[in-house]
Length: 357
Image (cartoon, one colour):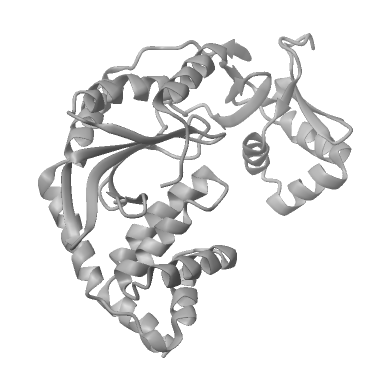
């Protein structure tokens, strides 16, 4: 499992961001993009043209969302951003002027960080922390193995050492849970079981058993062209989901479910790899599970180091390599891909081995 920050460090940052961020409901025709050298700024004005807040920088995520909403092809948007920022500003402003239906603009520390639909329902990190930590904290000996806040998501990865089993003699795994959330429209709230392997500190996300809550709700509107979006309390629908989150956190460390996953690991341990051409097996599996060429090279290295030429060994090589990638977001994706590989249908595993033979 890729190392992150401590729980306390993450909580400090969650609190800081909660106090610093501002959300706005704004008609796009009140927005104006401006280039200054290579940097792009977003201006927010009232009907008279008076600027309401200081010009904001624009994150990469917000740039992508603006381009998507304005239906500017991503490759062209990126080229303008890199080579002709003035042309990008002209294009964006031309289309902004045509739009009067409000959008939600999420800002933090002087940057526009998300440009979202007015149906976007905010389920913020501080809400998720407030709901889940009391449940996790009530589990005896719970260990917060890795936490992180990236530009796109918050992650909490916790392990329950009281619930453990052996996949094979000496290979001990423990039950855990991963809780993630995106405040910028890049994913739903998600609570998934996690398997932690002691021998190599691998984390594997059990991606077939997740509770999710999409950030989509009723249309939010205002008679004004501009308004600060107040921090409303969770409504009845959200409170129902809070109860679902609490139940799912408890279920994620359920002994029966954990035993089922361990059983799948033991089955994968018995699924041998065709050893005539191991690099090709890794390459073919990587292609099917959207692992890049550079990542595949790292996976092959970890597989050879482990000398476990089985389906189980391949899945562990993927999750072990996740510790080596720079991006915490991508590392977490690889932890989930590792489980997808572990549980691939026997027919698919046989086909990959035959193709490599």
